Each structure stands twice: as C-alpha cells, then as structure tokens.
Image (cartoon, rainbow, N blue to C red):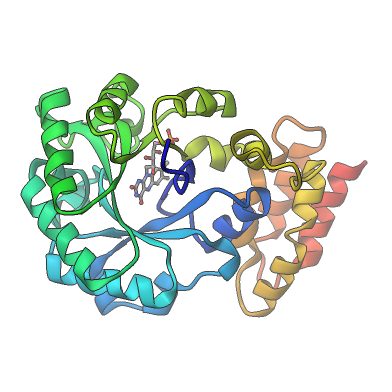
Length: 324
Ligand SMILES: Cc1cc2nc3c(=O)[nH]c(=O)nc-3n(C[C@H](O)[C@H](O)[C@H](O)COP(=O)(O)O)c2cc1C
C-alpha cells in the first residue's frame, strides 16, 4: 500500500475529540492521525478562532475538520488551518444532524458531488496541506454503490486524494444522529470495491471497528482505518497501536496507571491556566474499565473534578483508589 499517513486514524467527534482528549490519546499512540471535532466555517470566521483552533504541538499529526459548503468560506478556513499548523484539512460530508443539514453541511452534501468538488478545489488553491473528505456510503435513496462511486470520482477529479468512508448510509429524515451511527447496516464490501476501482486513492475505512485485529485484517484491503467510539470508551486499546499496526519496538505503557500518571504534568499546566479539571479527566474515565477499583475512580472524579478550583490532587486521589 503506498499510503501510510492515514493507516490508523482517530475519528472527529463533537464534544469528545477536543484538545484535551487528543492530548490524552497522543500519550497512548504516537502514530495515530488525530482529527478535531467539526468546526463550521461560520463559527471559525465569525467566532473565537483561538478557542476553535488552539492545540498542543504534541497532538500532531492533526487534521482540522470543517463543516460548510461555501467554497470561498471553506478556502478561507483551509488557509487558517494551515497558518495554525494543522497537517490536514478535512471536509465533513457525513454528519447527518438536522441542525447541520439546514446549513447544507455534512451528509446532505453527498447529493451534490459537483458542489463538494468545487469546495475541495477552492480549499486546495488556498492551502498547501492535504484536503481530505469524510463521507458515508450513501444517504437516503442514493443507490448504494454507483452513487458513491460517482461522488468519489467527481471529488477526486477536483484533486482530493484521501477519502474516509463511514461504512453506513445516513437516513437524513427519520433517524437521529445517534441512530444514524447504529441502525443502518455496515457495508465494508462497498469500501473494498471503491479501493479496487480507485487504487490510486487513499481509502480509509470507518464504522464499527473495535479491535486492532480487525484493523489488521481491514488493512489488507484498504489504506487506513479510523476508530471513534471504541477508542473513546476504551482508550487503553490505543496503547498497542504503535506496536501492532506500525511495528514499533519501543514505547507504550507497561500498565494503565502509568498512562494516567503521564497526564499529570498536562493537568497541572492546564488547570493552572484556567482549564476545568473535569474537562480533561472526563476523557480518561474509560481507561480503567473492567479493572479493580474502576468504579471508585470514576465516582471520585465525577463527584470532585467538577468542583471549582479542582486540580491535580483530585486526579491523584482518584488514582490512589486504584493502587490498593
Ligand atoms: C459523539 C460523536 C460525535 C461525532 N461527531 C462527528 C463530527 O464532528 N464529524 C464527523 O465527521 N463525524 C462525527 N462523528 C462520527 C464519527 O467520526 C464516526 O464516523 C462514527 O462514530 C463511526 O465510527 P465508530 O463506529 O468507530 O465510532 C461523531 C460520532 C460520535 C459518537
């Protein structure tokens, strides 16, 4: 496979893959490519740019995901992504929420491949970092394979080389965003077919992946895998990524507690700078799932990390409950 950049990616997830979460994930894997939550062009152009774009250098390689459908606005935001040091800018064509559809953002764009091609072309002219697209295998009544094929070939003709495909259709009417991540069946075979027909494209598969063994097997057919929910709920999975998927012989924590300890300096610096402890530790709650003391650890954090002024000592006390 010619592509290595996207071999293992962690998914963009609103309210979840924020900068604190990504910093924590990065402690566990040096090789994964990380994605921000989606930021709309409107929020970026008219809102608080620093709040949306700030990240820690440790997080790289890092992609900014944009939501939008106006070529000029997307071009402006792609330029910002490059100026802030992002390694990639990704256009969201997979998000099915109503709020997002009304602004012609997300999965609804799959019905307009020419517009997406125009957006991608505009973004590519305004920045030198890769412009990529994340989409579904279809929406509503779009015929499963042919329409997706048309979408991908039209957008690829505009210069996009990397496609991250969530292997489920989105039903824009009738299903909630959550249901749209669970109800429509996964159809990996359509993405395998895509890779076969477009061997020159970097094809990343997403949806329902829960183990690194599954990743290894999928990587025999496609260029990359992207995991979302399983990585969030079971972050310890990430500790073996560099070794199992990239052949790293060093690195990785010997045990979960060491991974949690490694977050201490970050917690100290961030809480001193004004971050709420809970905003960092909420992403760590799944680290000890299934381990002795995990419930006490989680309870201590839910009861104390939200308190004003809570800092590193609260986190350390929670960890002490696991050491017994
Ligand atoms: C809480 C949550 C928020 C999400 N937000 C986004 C988003 O902002 N942009 C996006 O492209 N996908 C978003 N997704 C979809 C994921 O990126 C991914 O495509 C989906 O969860 C399927 O992968 P998984 O089965 O590995 O979780 C979100 C998913 C979840 C669970």
